[in-house]
Image (cartoon, rainbow, N blue to C red; front, side):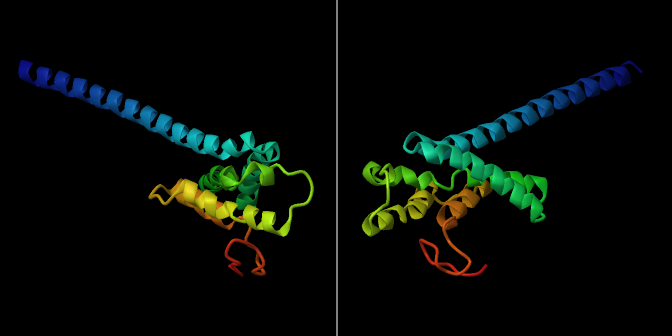
Length: 160
């Protein structure tokens, strides 16, 4: 009988340890997720330090993207992913020369051609990853100036 009681006590102790470790793992996973999102948001806001207009714009676009995703029928988790990814849509402006990016007034055709490179610069900055959020960010950065009629840039994509 004593052996059964001792075995039961050890079993309960092991269950308690497993629960503690599981809780710790859940907390660490949540912290890792928050850290990833914060790093992505920080990179997206980096353009703010070069162009004050872009700074608030990227945050607004993230929130608008979330609202549109929900209206389009995406589930909340997907809409949140889109919001975080959209924040990085203009990160490529980091690679645009100040005299063009910050120029008051109208750009020359040559300057506008240079501005039109920022989607591809952004896609290169983000890079190719297996991480779903970064891949979505890369796609959004690369295609956010494409238009349904094919008159957008950088690739003139048309339709869906």
